[in-house]
Length: 142
Image 1: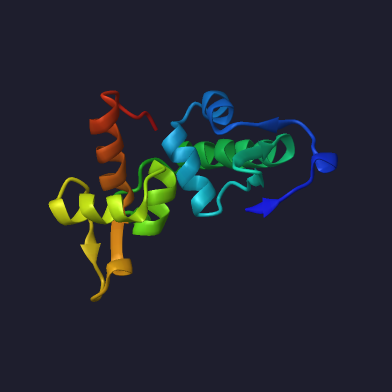
Image 2 (image 1 turned 135 degrees about the vertical axis):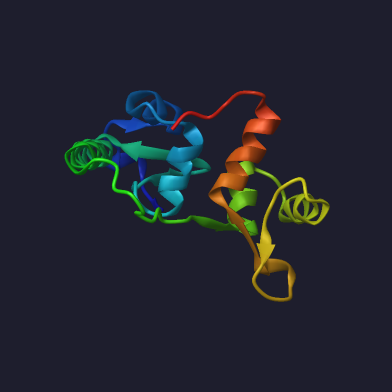
């Protein structure tokens, strides 16, 4: 994410606004920003999506849906698996990295280690979604 100045501002949307406009969950919007599928800017501690970037994203989303309808559900097609680091999960959940490590060690958040060391944890997107859903008491909609 890039920092911008107030003088560069155009119409900016919050993550919640983009979620409502696109009809997908806030967690998915955050995930798309983290994997750089949706460009966002940081203003102080806040994350915003410009109107232009949202339009580009919307067009890509509509094209993908249209292409999926044309192709149909291809059998045996592999879905890209998204893995987060413990540091990324800490940012998403707004927790300290130590708390995320504790959740992982106690098994309350599912993940796996790729090597020795604390920063070697990887958390699948599905596990993060399950954790968020279980903690919020509401189901995420994609």
